[in-house]
Length: 114
Image (cartoon, rainbow, N blue to C red; front, side, top):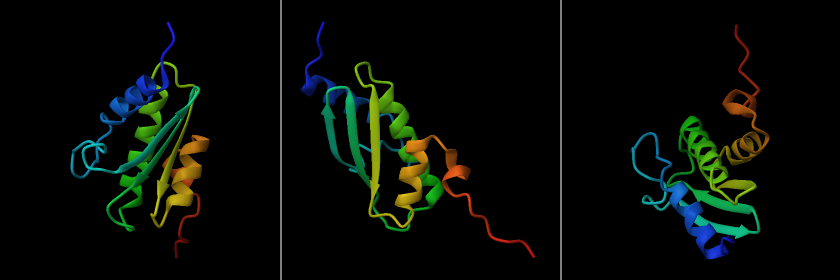
């Protein structure tokens, strides 16, 4: 059975609807944080934009990582790219999630202790 791309895109959106904002406990889809979803073959790309540029990086990281895991769980999706836009730590979060580095690996520089 072949899955048509609109059906696969719908399945990706359904998977994303299970991802919750850890502070508001609502779906990132319902909150309007998902700005674009594309599926090309077995690759899905999702773009997220949070309501504030300064959303806590731990919450932002959780949503991006959870979105990545949710999208990758969709049958027919082989690879996923989740891109956080317009956030002060977007570069660190995007590269860390893509590399599977975890939160600490995404922010390896820690302040020096006195």
